[in-house]
Image (tube, rainbow, N blue to C red):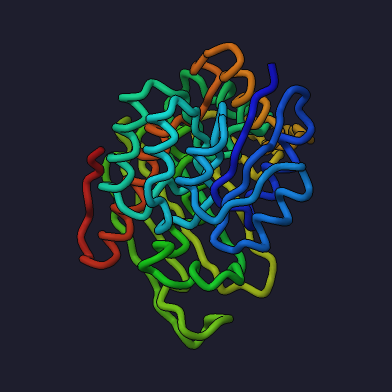
Length: 323
């Protein structure tokens, strides 16, 4: 029996999921909801489904096995809860919400319904990331360094702090999640942001131009994650984990490993979006949550870290993480 999938949000990131899901046998994309009717119609025309501008109507009219929620951080307005109540499994793009209160409400609905959930932390699904995790298994970490350096996305909501949370919450969240995945839970952060409107590529925004977040892990390891969204020149994106005798760096589908007198580079040459899509569909078919590397609760934990960093930058004080 085919797995029937609907979408709430058919813009930028949804395209990657369309491409991944359309290559899996036995998957049907059947319903598409977007605040922009033309976008929803284009998606429906591509896959032969039906377009909507209201998720409630879509969920009431269409029988679905799974729902992809691909909306900006501020726009999680009830689709997840309604889908969960109907027994529909959920894929939610990161970050899972704009506030921790909203995320916790959705998490509670998912747990109550007992549906499967996955969050779009696709970096976890690179073969290079899994190899790094295996090579770090059982080793004591002493330092973690991560970064997301680049330009600013062109969508207007992204540059509004109230809507996106800024780069730390909306984009660098991938690096915070990798830090948790590779080095364990983060228990406290102390952050500093630079606000430089004159450097911004777009006017009218209020997000920070750069940031640095000092991390304390439950293990005692310390780390730092930096970011900037105003570069015109190439920047770096990735994470490096240090142990006494092994250093491992992960960036997209590449892992570099250093040991005394040895360096190895590993390229997984895979598509992380395709890997996570296959894992989600297989988990649904087998009713096996163990196949999911980042469920909704994992998304809530990573959101809590980035929200704490945002609070720390505003208050000038370290902030402990609580979920």
